[in-house]
Every structure is written in structure tokens, then in C-alpha cells.
Image (cartoon, rainbow, N blue to C red; front, side, top):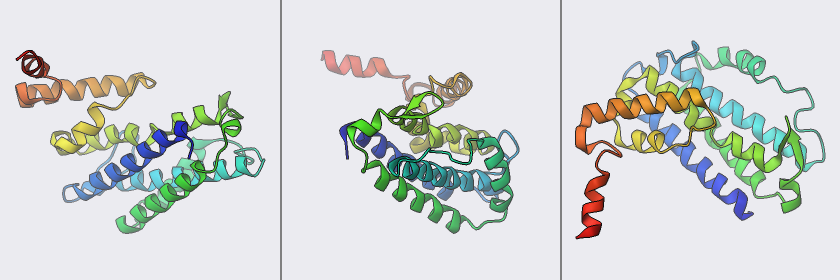
Length: 206
């Protein structure tokens, strides 16, 4: 796997692992809570696997010398069509789909040559730029889950994930990240992430 792709592959592995962690730590009936936009958390988890399947299909098309989206690119329509099937899906099946599509993506990501990474992909992006854009998909939706299940916004592993995520390409999520950070600082005080940097500076000076 090329070095430029390897970091994105590592991030995919981490983000899928964290999505599984979120699912494992949901409170009772947490799967049925509504995220912004109206989906349940259960449907969102299904969406993550479904989107990865579409990403994998697009990459496979490129490797075969075909357009990435031969049927057109309309994610809103595709998401709306797929969501009802996830409303009653069992969580183990949804997580299995997430794992399988992650593995498919990793296999494909290891197949690209340097020249292929620079190929035009879609919407004015090269292949490597599209991979970079896709890499923020799961962590972007993590904020949606926290909105639906605020209890997760006190979990150290979840906070370490979303508070250090780079949301600069999505101003709306960046604002939500900042609000979460402010809420965490208010709740935890000096022990909040980022709130005690001066302690480390003192240690370095001693």
C-alpha cells in the first residue's frame, strides 16, 4: 500500500473500531434515538456500512477503467432509499456489514498505483482527494450520535476521538465540536481535554 494511502487506511480502521465502540456503549434503547435529520442511531449505523459499500464499488470501477458512478451520483436519493431497510435491522448484522465493507475498502486501497491516485475521479477531485474526503465520513457522523445520545459525550474514548478530529472542511460540524469542547470543559473543569496544557508546559520547564 502506498504511503499516501496508508494513513487513510489506518484512519478507516480506527474510525470503524470507534463506530463499533459507540454501538457497544449505547444505553438501553439508544439505537432508537433520533439523530439530526430524523434517522435513528440504528439507521445511521446501517448507513455507514452502506456508504462504504458504495465507496468500494466506486473504487473497483476505477480499477477496472470505468467511471466511478456509472449510474450517476445522487447520495441523498441512495441514502433515502436504503434507510428504511435499516430501521429494523439487527445490530450484529449492521456491524458485520461495517466490518466487511471496511475490509473491501482496505483491499482496494492497497491496489492503487501512484498514477492512479492522480486520476480524475468525480466532482473535480482526483482519486487521492476523494479518498481524503471520504475519510471524514464516520467521524463526522459521530457528532450526530452524540447529539442523539448525550451520555456518550462524557466517555473519554469518544471525546478523544471527536475532539481531536479535523472538522475544518465542515463549518457546521466544527461549531458543534467547539460547543462539545466547551461543555466538556464546563463539566470536567481542569481535567477537560485541552484545558490543562499549562501543566505540561510546567513539567517541560522543570
